[in-house]
Image 1 (cartoon, helix red, strand yellow):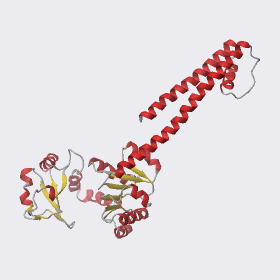
Image 2 (image 1 turned 90 degrees about the horizontal axis):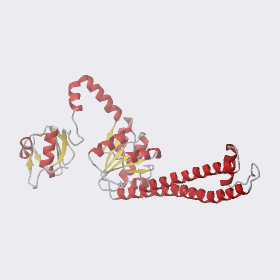
Image 3 (image 1 turned 180 degrees about the horizontal axis):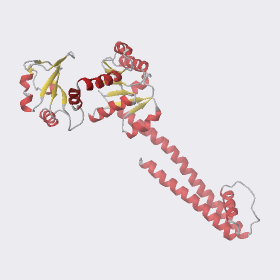
Image 4 (image 1 turned 45 degrees about the vertical axis):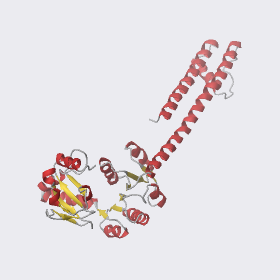
Length: 339
């Protein structure tokens, strides 16, 4: 909890205690000084400290009048203090939230080559979890303000607003971002935000969710680099578990996230060589050095080769995909200082 809010809560508890103490003193005083019943004493105390102006239950003697004067003066101080504390607390809470938002926006403004997730539903939240595990900087754009508390609990940088608004996209830093994930539940909304993001940032990598296969071509045409159909992937996966259950179980046990259980890693060729001289997969000798096996190659044009030959030349701006046990992947990362 924020220290300022905690301090004000202590003051509020103190103010509430003083009000109850004032009520108790008033009830006890009227009961014993004026001989009132409990109900009459409570009534006289309330109308006295609230200064509503009602008449006395029975005429007051001199001692009761002096006590009433004391109670009125004390109540003005106590109630004034309580009201000022409550008002200050409400105002300060609003100011603290505003300061938190400004601080978060300042942090987002410093992001570069980050990822933007549009929508914090089931798909968006899952994407955020994986990005957190990879320690990748990202920002969530969420229209539903009810999700704000959830985002704060998950400690996720966010922007509240409609992603269809270019101003909201700019607040999330879409012009500086490297990737954009459109995870909204509605295909039409995803189509619009993909168009907007592509218009602002021509080079950004856009991945969009789609509920219907008919939206696939439209989203690609709008500028999405990849379009994911969660329902289709789920159905294919379930069917594969029937047709080739052993193979799917093996694939499911492969992990590409986390620290100690990674089995697959994608590495840029530039991280493996200190020279611009052409090299081959054989020259890397990864199997002997780390125990990892090269199972794929992505060339500079984005084309994939599965199980590439050992004499394949590794071009600049290309990547290799390696497979290994967690300890072998860790050895690979240590060998080449890969974070």
